[in-house]
Image 1 (cartoon, rainbow, N blue to C red):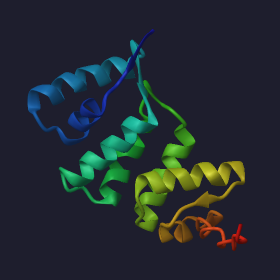
Image 2 (cartoon, rainbow, N blue to C red):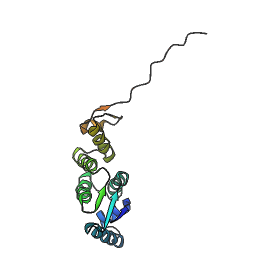
Image 3 (cartoon, one colour):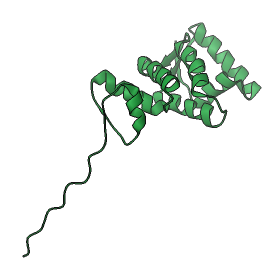
Image 4 (cartoon, helix red, strand yellow):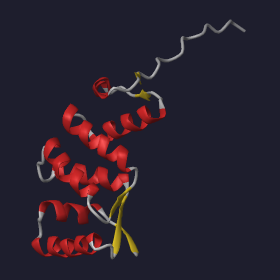
Length: 145
């Protein structure tokens, strides 16, 4: 089976149908994936870009992004990196109204039993141990020479 790494523009064309000619070509690619003629690999970085483009350029809500991307990631022939973490992050993004990257980071930290260090208070919503970066060390008096 041929294996391809897909870019964000391929996923965006499939989800939005924007640029009908390109969307039609992607539909053909998805048909090949469903028939197991090709495996379409998706990095987490590309998924994050897709989420950003759908939100910023196309105006999709977090819920709409989740509703579109979860079935896409579960589709025959789609091979996402870290599928469980991606699905968990998409669900948390939509359900808890946080950024995808924060939701993914929290999911990864939870799985490892570790904490997230950030100034972003959204981590309070994500059921993960969250710590603020510590302040500067106290100034030490320098004895005169």
